[in-house]
Image 1 (tube, rainbow, N blue to C red):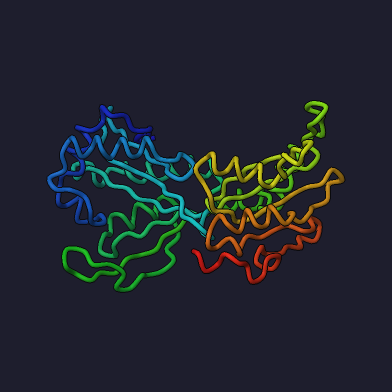
Image 2 (cartoon, rainbow, N blue to C red):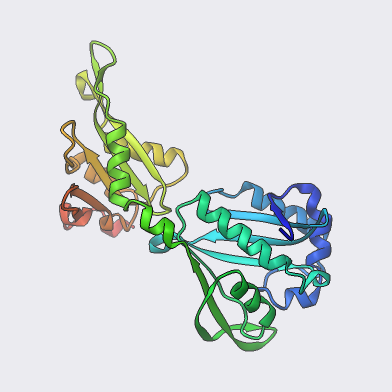
Length: 306
């Protein structure tokens, strides 16, 4: 191992600034970085990385000879690309050509594939940055094509290259989304009596947010109709954790069969987001039969208010 990568700490700010406060380094990066880059800039960046969601942002310092010499990160994408992530990196000029970055890229890709459900990591170096292209090639990335006239840097229109690394082993072993949701919902089913007035756990639900996270809930049945369906319990869990956009929903009855959400749950989900009509709902696990929420609620009354 040529180098090591580790999570950032605020004491790294000075060495971080020394590495990136160099026009030759910044000329190969996207715009938006201050120059000169100060120690305070470094502290702000590190605070941002430490506060980021660890399931979407994988940010590390590159350590060589006990010193921070660069930065490397993998950033999860969204929507239909939620299992894809972009790789970005830089290293201080005096450490170019020593094999450090290739080693760091291999390490972070191995870490991300082993510690998340991401199956594809890509990078888009400038076409003229031959050193960065070689790093990716030596790290096992495949060149997928040239993105012609894809950027403007320092006033010049330039091409970029697309490189990608996929973890086919994980892709083959991983269950599909519906299997993961079905299993999660089934695992929380546990019918029980809470009190003479309340029963819970007869139905389990699992929802997948658009960020790819799974949240579960169980039904709560009470006297005086004060209870809550499993779907709404799962949604409350999602909202508690800072998300509000749903991609897929599964509700499992005690007999193991998938069920369609009740009218109240349909209305609740529709009110969450202007695109809620696209939420997929599992109707049959064996056949993977699904329906969208807008098919269950055509001509919904609230569309014009978004």
